[in-house]
Length: 193
Image (cartoon, rainbow, N blue to C red; front, top):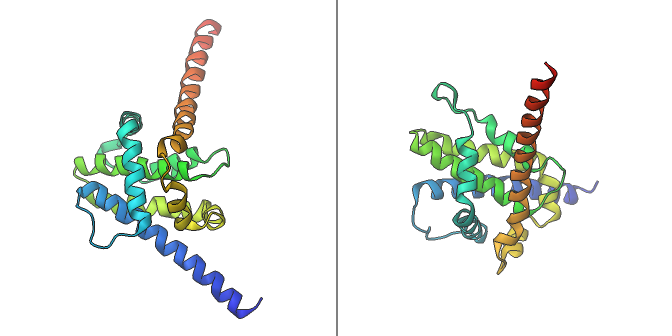
């Protein structure tokens, strides 16, 4: 490979990593501190704030229900829950901005919950976990879709509800399927044994 091409690829990957970590962590910090708008705010950050706010205005109860179903054993928060939710959201191999924003919205509600429990130091951990998942498993998709510039373009003037509705329905449907199977298994086992 040509050295210029290698340098370009490395620069692109480094930029994606830095931008992703910065965006997610800045968003979660701003969300949990309810700070006012920054003097200088990237288009991606202002878009993320707008889109997540719109989603949470309409679906906060669904996200809060997910948080309430998490177990915090012995008062200890397990960072692995973020990865488990991310894997669940992308289980079928389909990637899109709606799913990425849903993951960030889940992280925002989780951070808010953890802060209320007195664990504000976990906000950065949640942000790093989300960013690490995106950079490990969604990196190629992010690059093919113009990274965070593509995110801004996608949600420019678009109602986020349409992009998120299917993701939430799938997430809730998946949970409902497991609940139904558990109920059927319990019913079946009661009559068999």
